[in-house]
Length: 343
Image (tube, rainbow, N blue to C red; front, side, top):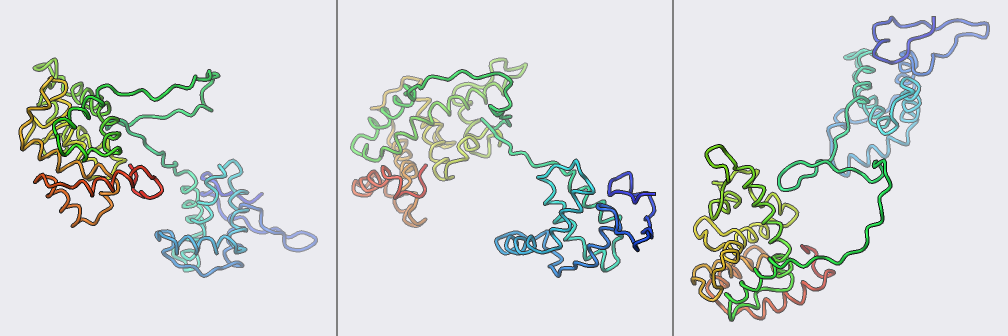
């Protein structure tokens, strides 16, 4: 009777004995329980018992050293013989699991059959798929290689210029008057690109707010309040989730500039621009809020220490002349090599 292979159906079988031939005792069948017993007994390696739970560079170096040992090579051959149809990208995980659980067998806390079951389960564990989100919702990405049709070559197109974003930036510069230097090139480009993103997000929030009592959903400043990063807004509606690739201070500043704040909801640049409000008659306290948020749209200013950023924000709110600070920020923001926190 041939020795059972290491598969789920063979776990209930008894251990097969070695047979005696004319030339002596036969070697265990590759991938069998006896073969694993022989490997663990002949090629014992001392390794930390908690290595599977460790993380970091030290753990990676330890695994790299273990991958060069005869035990790793022998277990790799055993796993591939025990499960010939196993995906190759899971073999390394199964070998590491066997190495990490070998001390339980040597200490007689586990049987070899139980170790095989743990290794088999490690091979069946599904891979973690990277989840992509758009406007707070999970989306699935399809690779071009998986498309069963040939895709036509798309002609090169120039990047469309957002008329809405440009109008928002123009209104902001007019309202700032003598402080328009605070709208650095990076801040203007970020506001321009984020305006359309904010409009798409507001449309998504409005679509989720449709009810029988309110068939048209939220509108006006109530819609802006539902998308701001405040306690009143639902977490899935907060626009900071859309701006999650940006530094958090920048995401908060963008939300304040485009959607306003709970204290000053009428400070929303998008709402004022769409409503056709004059950029020359903006209340002083709203302009002060805008000046306080603009420094966080410049990557070079964002790289300042927390104390210095707070001082720049307070001076901006008061209306101090910070031309020199923003002039230096404009020059450094244009050079990506000097700006490690480029947005």
